[in-house]
Amino acid sequence: MDNWRQNNQRRFVLDNGSYQIRYGNDVQKHKQLNLVAHLKKTGQMIYDFDSLFDESQVMTYYKPHVRGVLVDFDKQINIWDKFLNPKLLKDCSITYPLQPFTPDQVVNKLFDVMFEYYNVDAFCPINAQKMLYYNVLAKEGVARKQFTYIIDSSHSATYLVPIFDGEIMYSGLRRMDIGGRLLTNQLKDNISFKQFDLKNYFLLSSKIKELLCFVSMNYFQDMKKPKNHFRKYYILPDFEIRREGYAVDLLNVGFLDEKLILDKERITIPEILFRPTEIGLAQKGPTETFFDSLSTIHKDLQGYFAENIYLSGGNSFFSSFYDRLYNEIRQNSSIDWNVNLTHLDDIDSVFQGSLHFNRSSEFQNACFTKAEYQEKGFDNIKQYII
Image (cartoon, rainbow, N blue to C red; front, side, top):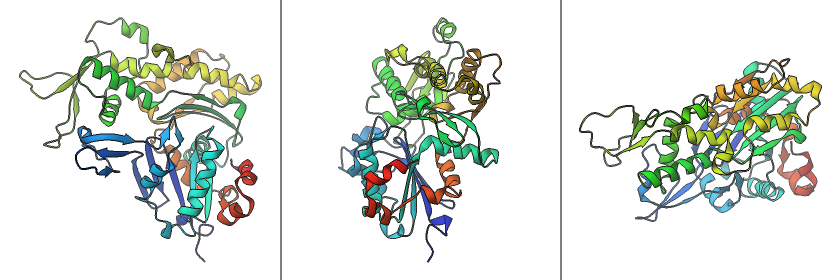
């Protein structure tokens, strides 16, 4: 019988991020935002958002995640139902990347939903940063790496994870409660206070952030530069004629379309990642957190991890993010260390790493079957989740 054990195409990945979902296998892929919008006028629920979705119609956004943790399974299942079909998942497996510190109650509920509702035959919840490790293996064409250090800055948080010989060193694992959602909300509030009210325009604010913000290489010097030194205009989208918003450096005389003006906000927003104290958060930046994490590792091994740092996550795509982080780590490292920082420049790195894991020899042993779960129960198998 053709099932997930014999056929890789029956091994699916559900990368259920708090901002975006990626689902598929080696031959198909589905991607969508992980939220639902309730429209004011019609009461309609919207699950798919194109680039010109008019947020002015929205009454409420529903997000199944809170601070990176899946808490509302009813809303999440409503979203999953748009592309997951229990009739087609029989004899299939689903690999589900999990963020560190996910509560046992959430993982237990995931087992119930996958086995009882979606009828999968095998379920594999596994650490998301370990899937980035498998992405590294695939890119470098190696079967194993002894030293790997992952810095993953995504929507809800930033994780710093040392991995030794394929195993996470949990004593050095660190989480910063700063991610893309916080930056978008800061920009949205800033623009709403000074220019247009964008408080109900989260998706538009996120687009503006991604298009215009960048990381300063010398923040304090840049903040001393005169007003309008970093000025750029964002021309707001016109939903009636379905025209995208766009950025320009200069405006023609008599330009009438509605616009936003961004100046130093372009650098102050991403700076929150490096200096959380800028908005009153009592947290360290990624460089300090990195060295705090390394301090838990034997000093003779620290340099080897510094030689194998991998940067991932949506925030890593800010212009100059890589350069700033590399410079700070290099400047604070021992002169004997050959610091090397590699950017995993695929926005779907966790998903791609999970596909590589699904093809690996370790995959089947990491899966839990429906029969095994029903026989032993969650409490007896949770210790084997990797």
